[in-house]
Length: 346
Image 1: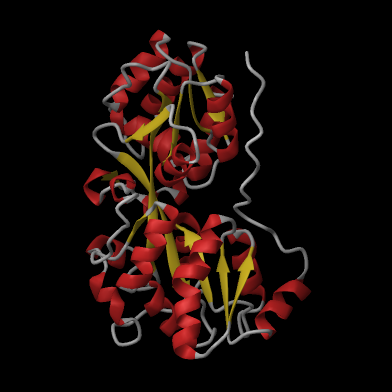
Image 2: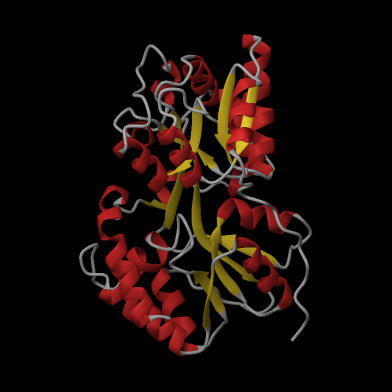
């Protein structure tokens, strides 16, 4: 077995340690935005913040952190929140709505909402909208997997049969553990949101074969692929293509049928935050900003008018290839799913 390669960690969330950091960031600019780190932040600065500042003459500060922390900070200081705009995964965005921490958009304040794909625009009932999305398909080693599975059923059967070594998200991985590792496999094996046992049975069979492992850190996946510890992985499209294009041409990515489960990042205006946030959000949802951001990060975007650079256009998962879990119905079942997983899988 070859030694695991050191790929370097791409920091997704940088947690700020003190409330002073929050208040300092908020006081240094006209607008404060909560966002993710690494290439995500770089793309945001280039594609949204720079043109917004140039047009408005206003200054934007970016606060990096963890979504749960952001929401708790906003809740604790709701009259004068530390941020004006937040980017959140679906489960946290729905939590923000449920806790009354975000304002509703209107067509006059965010006119570019009209150009969004309808399901992305409507998902939050106006309390924010999808900004970008990723799909979790399969990245695999072309040298060791000559006939990759065309469907998710073939993935399950091939893993059990030992045709490859595979890895998939653990249940504790945000934006994937519940929807992919539980709901998706339940649906494909005759189960449902209220009956996930058939999905857990499939996962147990794959793990019992000795050919399936679980991951909680996306960088762990890339190390495993490079070292040869695994032949394929359930992985995000944008991250996969960035890895492949970064000198790893022995790998490829695709979405098995009937489609890949989607993970969405929302943009929301914080309640009692500056109304300048609406102008920022409108800029973020413009055709120009969405085209730039999607091309830079290799993820799909919400705008139906967005276009992508020729080098990455084929890498963007089309909306018709996406599978949408019942996101709003999952939180009330989450505790039970986790309990079942911990009893049966661990």
